[in-house]
Each structure stands twice: as C-alpha cells, then as structure tokens.
Amino acid sequence: MVKNDAFKGKHRFSIFAVGLMLLFPAGLFAAERLTVGVAANFILPFKALAQTFGRKHSIPVEATFTSSGNLYGQIINGAPYDLFLSADRERPEKLFQNRLAEKPFVYARGKIVLWGLNKDLYSTDKWEKALMLPSLKKISIANPDTTPYGFATMKALQTIGQWPVVQNRLIFAQTIAQSFQYAHIGSVDAGFCAYSSIFTDEGNRGRHLLIYHAPDIIQAACILKRTKIHNRAEAFAEFLISPEAERIKQTYGYR
Amino acid sequence: MAIGEVDWTPFCLSGKLAIMTTAILLILAAPLAYFLTFSRFRAKFLCSAAINLPLVLPPTVLGFYLLIVMKPDGFIGSIWGWFSNASLLFSFSGILFASLIYSLPFAVTPMQTAFAKIDIRHIESAKVLGLSSTAAFFRVVLPNSLNGIFAAAILIFVHTLGEFGVILMVGGSIPGRTKVSSIAIYEAVEALRYKEAGIMSLALLLICYVVLITINLLNRKNGYGT
Image (cartoon, rainbow over all chains, first blue to last red; front, side, top):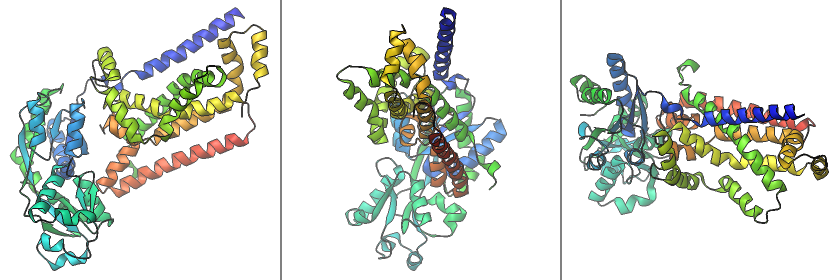
C-alpha cells in the first residue's frame, strides 16, 4: 500500500513537471528570421519586397501588418520586432528620441484616394464633389488616432471644411487596409484608402479620386535597438531604399 | 487556391496553445474546484465570482489589465523578465498566460459541478477509513468525476482555439509566435485574401463542430460523475 502511494506521488509529480516545462518560452531559440512591424498601407509592396530580399540574401522575413499606432504601442511595450515600417515620420522619430530605435529614414511616399464601386463616382473628377453625392451614405476612413493615413484624411476633410459635416456618414476602420476592405466588400459606399490599394485586381475594378488636399504621406522606418540580428536588419534597411526596391515600390504607386 | 497554399503555421500555433492551456489548466483548476466545492470558507462566493469574471468581462477589459501587469515593468512582466530576461508581452508564453486566465472559468465550473454531484458520504467513508483530504481527493473525488474533467478539457480546448481579442491585445500578431488561427483569419480578410480566410474558417468550423458532437456523444453515455 505504501509503495503504491509512493508511485502515485511520483506520477503526480511528473505530470506537474511536464506542466512546468510547457510553461517555458518556446521563443528561446536563436532568432534568425527578420521580424518586421509594417504599417497596413504597405502590405502589398512589403510582401514583394520581402520575397525579393529573402531570395537574394536567403534571410526569411516575417511581418506583422497593423496600424502604425498599434505597432508603436507594441514596440513601447517590448514587442520583438527588428524593424518598424511606419506610415508617418513622427512615430519612428519618437522611438528614436526615446532611445528605442536608431535614426529613422524615409522609405516611401504614399497618397490617399477616395475609392468605391459606386457608379456615381464616375460623374466627377474631384473628391470634394464626390463627397456630396447622395448615394455615398456610408464612407469608411481609417482611425485618425492610430493611423497616419486616417489622420491625413481627417486633415484634408478639415481643410475643405467638411469634417464636422461628414461625421455621421463615416465608418471608422482599424487600419487603412480595413477601410479598403469595407469599401471593396460593399459594406460602405466608398472608402478613403491608400493609393496602393488600386494596384490590385480588386482595386482596379473601382473608381478612385485622388485626395489632393492631403500632402504626400511621408513614411519612415527605423531599426529597433532591441534587435539581436542587427546586421540582417541593417541589410534589409539598405535594401529598402535600393534602386531594386524602388522599382517594386513604384509598381504599387509609391515614390 | 489549393489547401497547400494556405499557411498552416497559425493552426499549429493554435493547437499548441490549446493543448498546453488544457493540460496546465486541468492541473491548476482541479484543486481550485475542490476548494470551491468542499471548503467551509465563508467568503468562498467571492472567490467563485472572481474566477468566473473572464466569462462575462469584455476581452478588451481583460486584455487591458493583462497588458498592464504583463508589461516589462508590470507586476508579472518584471518577475518574468527577471527569470527569463525576455518580454512576456508579444511572446508565446505571454499568450499562454493570458489563455490560462481567460479559460479558467471553463475549467473550474464543470469540475465544480461534477464534484458537487459526488455523494458526500463516499468522501466521509474514505476519511473514516483513514484517508487524508488529499488522498480522498485523488482516490475518491477525481475517479468519480472523470466526465466533468473531460468536459472541462474539451471546453478549455475549443475556447482557447477560438480566442481572439485577448490574444490580439497581449500578443500582437507575431508570425510563428503569437499569430494564432483566429488572428490569421482576421488578417486574411483585411487583406482581401477571402479564399485563404474561407479555407481557414472552414477548418476551424469543422474542428469545433466535431468537438461539440463529441461532447454530445459523451453526455449521452452514462458515465461516472455526470
């Protein structure tokens, strides 16, 4: 009887030990892949860029796509990114000032468009006139607090004095990519989207009007100081502004 | 798009997370359920309510508090950093910790129900025959509530598989580390990859359906402890 008890005790202990072992982080392995936090407007060019870079240097690149504001918050809280590709200059600059990142550099200039499948959008060339169309009942916009594209859209709407007026027609998306998704699936009549969205089969099918009241969105990136593979991060940063990368970015409407 | 073109890494990650959460929670929740069922502690109902909070709280509220305690300078984050020299947020260990909290009520409640159905005289007889409380727990209570424990395991498993908001808040979406299947689907939809989202959603739907059928079949069988 006593022996039996002892065996059971051991058994219990081993279950506990396995449980404890499972608790230990799986991420202790040496990280060789580059992990990049990328603003959602840059999804398409980034995938092409990562593929080209990966082929050339045989370094796998993985990305998390979400709003710049979300990525910024994650980085401050210790997210394990090697690089941060923001959709603005302010956030990388702030990280640099707080000694979380190295000196930022500009990697792309983007534009905002009003995009939709609505036929009435073909009746005008000016976005501010399209805004008055009665058939545009709901318009999606990226969250101005967390996305630079949304912020620039808000500024443009303020410039033409329409910001207070359109409020009740606006649907706020988490990212500029989601704003395009809403417009594409037809849950809104039109959406403020990244110019790069129209360089897809889906985007091609709709009508886009340039928001020329908004200045070019200057997008900066930075290497994060917590990276453990600095050489690789630097190689990617250099590649990002190389002539080869420029060509890829141009095919998605970035300059 | 063929099934082969879908990246199944998020599914493996979800599976790993669900299995680990289930294993750890079963061990942690059993004594807790035992305490809540048989203890004569008067403020027991307060503990019970606290454990069930994740059931009713919005995932964002839970996610917010977890974010605060798991930050590198937060209460748990700093202890973790001291041991492992790594950040708990945005790591697999981090989402595992969040899952443990989030699924705790799904572990405790079915076990508590099963324990409560055990005839108290069995336990008393065991004690009269000289077993300690711990021995009575392992030899009388546990064997008589296997169905409850199994129900708890299944509930934890599917609940963890379907977790979204909390993991997104404390895990971000780091490929291979915290990007679980539900987040991968969300991102596929956002990027207009509907086919990929469709295949992944269908896979998740089938898994959950099979699991629910299993529960039903088990309930129909007249086993111990139910």
